Image 1: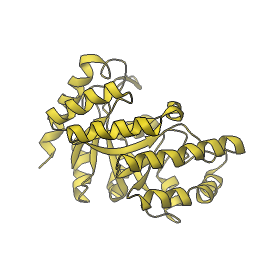
Image 2 (image 1 turned 180 degrees about the horizontal axis):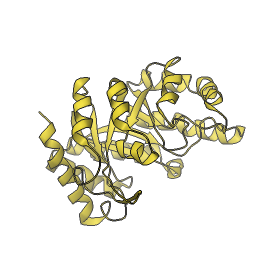
Image 3 (image 1 turned 45 degrees about the vertical axis):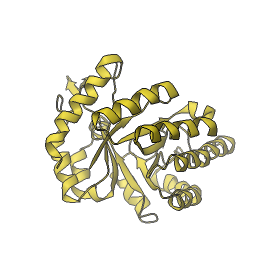
Length: 264
């Protein structure tokens, strides 16, 4: 397994992140984009790739969030798919091994969402695979109908190579059990987010470094080892305290230190 974290999207921030990664034993950086992706240019992507090469850090994955690829409105869908196609091109330029996005939302039931997914996604999945990328759909996040494992199972009947981008804390916060997901489907997990949480009175009150909260990372790692998972463990600084300033770096280093006990 390899360790990484989510990178800043601005070039100065990326330069600092790549330097920090190289100096502290992180092998990869993940790139995530929401609405601002529309402003990302090929020139900027080229500069991003140069920064990664300069520090010897890999792009672990490329994520596009919030765009509704199966939107009922034709104009919205067309615009979203334009962004999806462009994002795959940029991810290929960064040599990302994993592409992550939502499955879209039709506003209907599971059958209608799966039908729309099957109509829209094949050429984009093909483009990902031609560029050496695997496609991972992110659960309960980013304009996506992948709300539970049943949604994945319905898609796997048509597209067995679609993987899971797993964030255990998101699954817990959603009211589901990520350890059941891992017990049964760890072999379909393509990337794992490391995001910790402390719950009190049914509310998420803090998101500190891994090992300081309520996620059972030992269980997560056990199930990953059982399927010989060799992908990335991507740390996601999150929340109002642990994602900013010096606390962000502390979160990354403390999480790395904690997780290292499970790594060979």
